[in-house]
Amino acid sequence: MEIYAVGGAIRDEMLGLPVADRDYVVVGATAEEMVAQGFLPVGRDFPVFLHPVTHEEYALARTERKSGRGYQGFVVYANPEVSLEEDLARRDFTVNAMAQAADGSLIDPYGGQADLSARVFRHVGAAFVEDPVRILRAARFMARFPDFVVAPETMSLMRQMVINGEVDQLVPERVWQELARGLMAEKPSRLFDVLRDCGALKHLLPEIDALFGVPQSPEYHPEIDVGLHTMLALDYSASQGDELAVRFAVLLHDIGKAQTPDSCWPHHPGHEQAGVVLVKRLCARLRVPGNCRDLAVLATAYHGQIHHVSSACAPQPEVLVHLFERVDAFRRPQRFEALLKVCVADARGRAGYAQCAYPQAELLRAKLACARSVDAGAIAAQTDPAHIAARVHVARVRKLEQMMLDMNFG
Image (tube, rainbow, N blue to C red; front, side, top):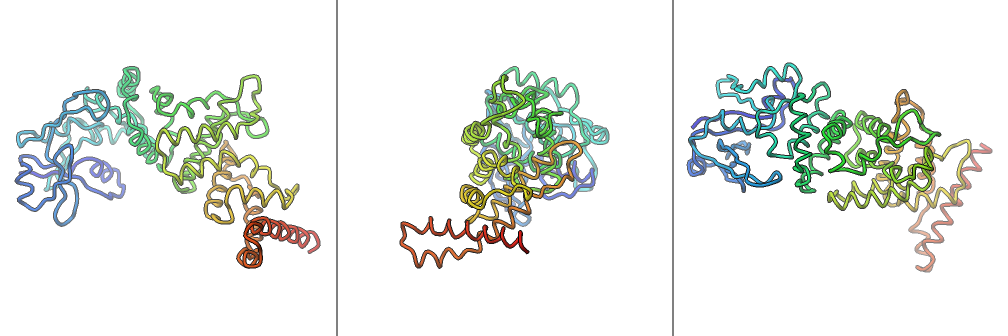
């Protein structure tokens, strides 16, 4: 039995990046021998085991043979006779097909070290085309490693995979998993660059693909189209370390603009309502978690209204309280804060505007804090249940009116 460290941990260590998890491949062993040594079997589709002490994953060396369409159409062969080189040959990119022996020596049969130095993602072999998840992984890796490129011959294979219909076999859960990981990378726009370049974006996320080429509203930044603006806003959100729900909402906030008839361009009347329908449809299709879906719906519906809040022309207290009620800001102020993050990214998502002021955020925070200071519980204790909501609403409006008077005469 021989044990080697493999995969992303080797790559990241050579790049000087922190390594969170290590995976190992075991050559020359059987499943029975692994269990006899205390390893816990966890693999359902192929023999994977957890170390009895470290709980790290150890997989028996294996080969894979294509048996159908999609990423699940494989027959796995795990046997003590499978060599380390054969196991590495089934991996996606050369930089992920390196192994390290117990003595620290590197095993690199496919040129991964050279590609790592050249900052290139290159497929290991012709079997790359058999797994459509590798298109998503390539896109995600490009978002995580902004100084890398995809090898031209690898991009050609990816385009052919799209033409052959392989990406259409991907299940929604796997698309969302890779999309979410890519959104949380350093430069998520590169994920969409790769998917567009190989033609997969219009199959996986046609609502996003449709944004490219649609002119932006003239009052914002007409020098770029909606797709490019969305990518700039997304990268800004990533630069701020925003959480996944915020980044996902930034990605979708202008999605309705692709529905605008050409005759209306560059204006987009009613794009918010059209966008909400698309957001809900996309989230249902990809089975997006509820917190991401809900924030994306709110951002799509209300980002324009939030942008138009200003101290120079402050909305009436009645209007603000209605806005806070519609986005459930009184009960969920933290989500409202996330909504403001989406709006800030939208405002700063254009070249040269990354540091532009966004006074709407502080103004709305102050107004919300003021309106939330109303003691709704006290009002409820003294009011007929049928009239509690109306009484609380009026009290919040009056609270904001008093705040405005104090500001004007203070």
